[in-house]
Image (spheres, rainbow, N blue to C red):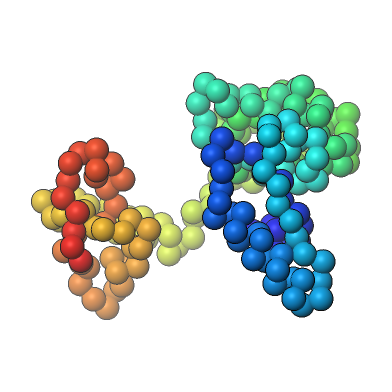
Length: 202
């Protein structure tokens, strides 16, 4: 988390209060203070525009739907600090790429980091040439361990058809242990509840 890595204050906007995040930043601030350092703080903004105006580093995490398409457009880019850093951790069309290219041209201290694009795998003309844009392929999960794990989980969901659904979808390590048989459960059916599938007691 950037709060820890850079000891930076957090301002965030979300439709729902992130109590867990707030508690984490509060605890980290107390840790820093106890060690004689300046504590970090958090603030829940009343709007996204408030975040854009105040933040030095903006990290985007919304879902992509009709309400977030071009969420960051020419007008919102203009709200940001001239030397801000924008990171898109969401989907490409959340940012109006044509407007972004123009903004980067006119604001050389403004920087952006992208691994998603509006028309993947293509970029809007000029984006790849901008010195203040870091663009990389969308390959965050491309480690050998992750890809093997994804393939294993998918195969197990097919092979153990009829088994109850694993009770903790965030804990998949038992299925990836090469030295033991996998649990008698389907590991990762995201919509299991909607399908009315029984949950494993394991």
